[in-house]
Length: 170
Image 1 (cartoon, helix red, strand yellow):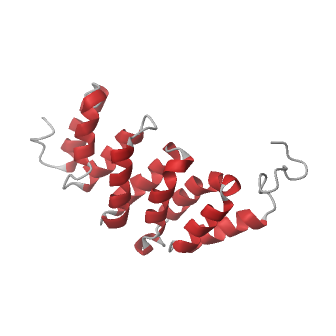
Image 2 (cartoon, helix red, strand yellow):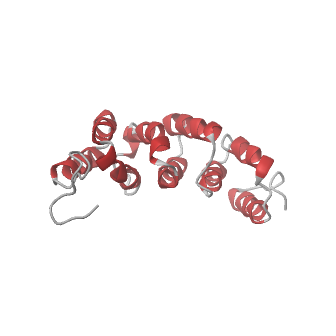
C-alpha cells in the first residue's frame, strides 16, 4: 500500500520506512520529508523529524520548521522526537530548538523530554556557560535549570578559565 493511500498511522509509517529504505528521500527527496513535517498524522511528523536528522544535517529550512513545531505542535510525540533529534545537531544549531522546547510547560512532568533536553544541553555548558544558563532559566523546566546549575557548581567547567579541573586532562 502506498503512503498516500494508507488508512492509518501504522500503514503510513511502514510506507514511509519503505520509501526511506529505498532512498526515496535522498537529494530532492528531502523536500518530501520537509512537507511531511506539516502532515496531519503526528507519527508521520515525528518520523519526518527522525529521518531528516539521520544524516546530522537536516538543513536550515528544516531547522526553522523544527523551532516552529517545538513552539506550537500539540503532540507530545512530535516534541519527544524533536528533543531526541537535538543530539544529532551541531551545538550551534541546537539553541533555538532547545529554547523553544524548554519553554513548553506542559512537558515539565514528562518522564523523558526534560532529560533529553539536558542531554542536548550538557555538552554546551562548558563551552557556553552563559548561554546554557540563560536557556535553562528562560525555559519552564526545573529539571533543566537544576541540572545546569549543578553542572556549573560542580567545578568541572574546564574552559571557563582555560584550565582543566584538577586531575582531569582536556
